[in-house]
Structures are given as C-alpha cells and as structure tokens.
Image (cartoon, rainbow, N blue to C red; front, side, top):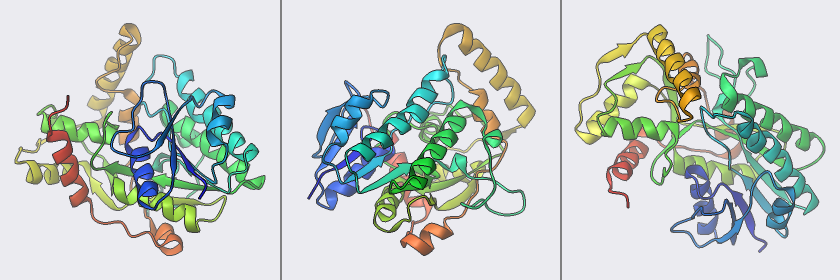
Length: 323
C-alpha cells in the first residue's frame, strides 16, 4: 500500500486526519515544519515548508493519497503577506507537487468561512459567495486557495474539497480560535460575550469526513463537515454544565466589540504582539456561521454526532496540566 501524505499533522485537525489513516492501516507521511512534533502517532515525519516546491515534491513522491490540511490559521499577522504565501501559494505548490508525482486522490481542507451565509436559510455548498464577502486576510486567503484547488480540479487533478466548521475536542495544542474560547472560559478569562453563532463539530467526525471525502467525494466538489448550529451563549452554557464554572451573563454590543478590536489590533501593529481582540475576529462574529452538512450526509455517508461529547473531551483536554 502506497503511503498517504498529510500536511499539518502536527496541528489539531491534521493530527486527527493522520490518526484516522493510521487506524485504517495506511503508512502516513507527515509534512511538518522544523521543530514540530506529531506525538502519539506512528508516522514518517518529513520536514518541509509549503513555500518550498522542491521539498513538497520530495514529500509527495510515491504517495497515492494527499490530504492538505495545513494552513496559516491566524486572525492577525504583523505581515499579512505571510498568510497568503502559506495558504494560497502553498496550496498551489502542493497541488502542483501532487500532480507531478502522480497522486491518485487529493483532499483539500478549506473552511466554513468560504461558504456563503444567506439571511433566510442555512448556508450550503451552493450558496453564492465571492472574495468580497470574506472578512480579513485569513478568510480571504482560504477563499483564494479554494479557487486554486478548483482550478486544479477543472484541469483534471482529482481534488475533493472539504469545508470543516468549528472543530472541537482533544489535541487542540495551539489552540485554535475555537479552542481558545474554551480555554479562556475554563481560565475565567471570559467575563462577557458577543451575540454570534458557530457550527460546532467533533474534530474526530471532521477527520472521519476527510476519509469519506477521499473515498466517495467527487473531484471539484465541496463538502461541509459540520454538525450543530449553536449560539455562543449556548456553547458557554454547555461548557458551564460540563465544568461547573458559571457562564458569563453580560452580552457585549457589536459596536463596543468593534471598537475594542480597532484599539487592540492597532496596538498590536505598534508592539508586534498578537491582539487580545483581533478586529477580524470581531468582523467574523457579526454573522452567525450556521450551515448544513446535508450534502456530505447524502453523498458521503457522513454522520456526525452532537457537540456535547466533543465539548466534554475539549474541557478534559484543556483542564489537564501541560508540560
């Protein structure tokens, strides 16, 4: 059996995608940056960077399957060009490497942020959306990268696109912005909240969805990998029930949150340190990121569980002492 390449295997979702493949008996080659680790998994660790085409060709050589999960997932960067180099140029570099080395199937991990959000219904893969709808450099870069993936698919490369929502669960090492909400709540660092909404999915279900997309997805098609649409207030209530902590009761008006984002992000531009309240995060929060995974259920057999178990595992993970 030829190996499967997973980019981003040292990260949250990528680690779980690699785990799913290992459990299915695949030899997994993990592309990671220098110094990154893939703890707890028996994988071949290959050092490389998405901005280095030659390194990507070496990593992809001999791999039948390629899962491109890696991304620069930051809602603020002192030099935003870094985000585009990794997410857009890096995706083009990797897909070109997969084409040259003869990969038989590629799964590209996009994001729910690239899904259109209509006012009168849940967003799905057919909702009209454009680059102008993307708030911030991260979402813009991921939208542009998704267009690159579609371009390669139209040219005949067997690329399937998945759009995970907000994964939660164990091994959120960095953590992700959603994981940081949970970590901040548990640390008592969330005295108030904004009126927004997320689609929460168990990271294990999202990783399984990657495999289902590899097995049965149609090249050039997009599949939302989500589960439960919840307001942030509902998420915090669930976390309170799981942890015994009290949920915040003060709701911050959007205008106040926006002003805080402007000040915090402006100060970050001066100091070079990430803002406590990234303005792009506030802009994203203006819309409830509520979508449906009906297509993935119908075409891939995707059957995610409810958010509660994933939130419970996340609470346990973030509550454990770290070295």
